[in-house]
Image 1 (cartoon, rainbow, N blue to C red):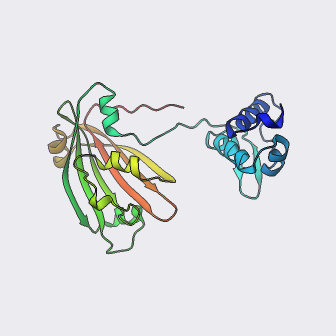
Image 2: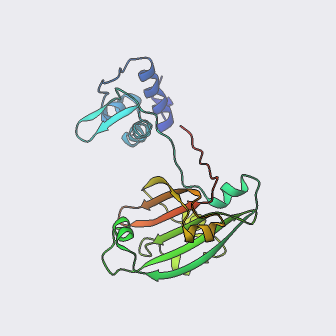
Image 3: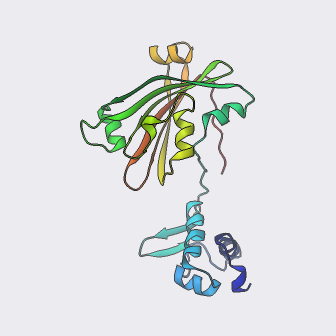
Length: 233
């Protein structure tokens, strides 16, 4: 394959995958470094970096700073998680969507949230409690904290006409995040907001996103009984 054909990170990735699958590079083998591959493929080093990074994220390569890159000995396929727009999720099921802001304020977060948001004691954040409805029935309510320093314009945005979930996905780029999944039984507050019985089983997702300088937002999503999550690998 000529150098001209390696004109994108996808074509580089395809060739790297071919070599792994053909056992030209066996599990545990170190592969040439980015500079060497860039010369071989006749492309920019950044193109090679993007291709190798994608394969590392999928679990096929093991990249270690200063130690090099090698083919994973026991490759682990990783599930892909994205941040869904709840309106799209509900409408994708053929249901009508509506959301309401139950409370919106500036407040000092409790210690647990302050630790997740990595803010100093006494710093106020934006706090929103919202309810998303599917066909007029409670679907999920969110307890969300936003750092205004990380999100210019959020305090003047109309988050009653467009949910904070959808507004943030559309307007605020992020570089990383984490998800935690758990289950709980509905207490008094959950039963009232989600129109269910106390003791009903509920799915809970805690999610945070961040950029290089701040944690952007941390939200707890509590779903009505019967919620099922689907993802792909």
